[in-house]
Length: 80
Figure 1 (cartoon, rainbow, N blue to C red):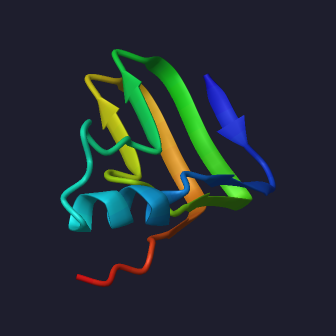
Figure 2: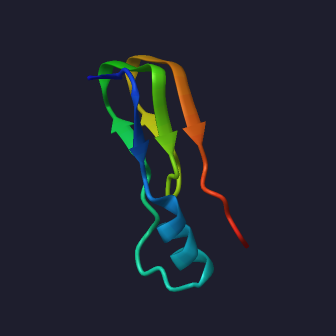
């Protein structure tokens, strides 16, 4: 799997965070990108932005030969 180049993946995190802080969330908050049991994974820019995750932004788990470089991660602003 390869995700690379210019662009933005927006997780609409403010929606999920508002529900969470208002205690009205009925399900768990979503990860923006979760890759499980992957092999030969590349996530790269330049110009790739992961924006406003509802929970974890990038969660690779149990992966082999994983390469992540030249990306921007921007978190949602949170009012507690």
